[in-house]
Image 1 (tube, rainbow, N blue to C red):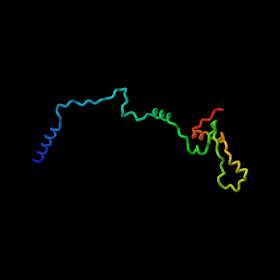
Image 2 (image 1 turned 90 degrees about the horizontal axis):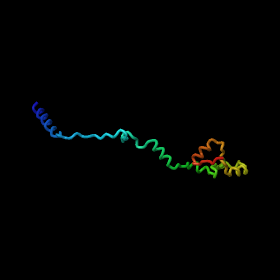
Image 3 (image 1 turned 90 degrees about the vertical axis):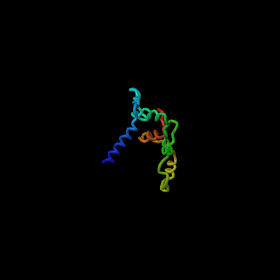
Image 4 (image 1 turned 180 degrees about the vertical axis):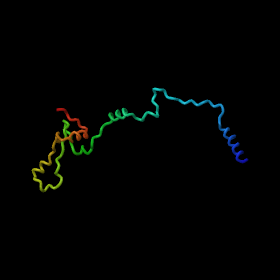
Amino acid sequence: MLPRSLLFACLLAGASAFVPTGVAPVRVLVPAAGAPSLASSPAMSSVMKKAKAAKRKGKSSSAVAKRFKVTATGKLLRHSAFKSHILTKKHPLRKQKLRRTLQADESQARLKTMQKLMLVVPKKK
């Protein structure tokens, strides 16, 4: 029992050596009521993201750019399909028509999508 009491007394004496005496209290800085705190505000707000996206230049789709050509009025020209293989059974006049470039139909619902991907704004009629 004696060694334990000696050990306990040494611990108490040693612990008091690390406690400072007469230290001024530490002041914690509190931000003002109107100032945003760093912890609560996100790195980028949605307004800032939208403003950054508006400044950024859009990219056209390279897949659409390979398949369509834009006219001066904003219409799209396309190549005909069905001319890549099995040409022996097709009539020469039919193959000749397939070599031509066609205008993409405005009635197609996908035309508006392709114009958006090409970053084309068609002129008003």
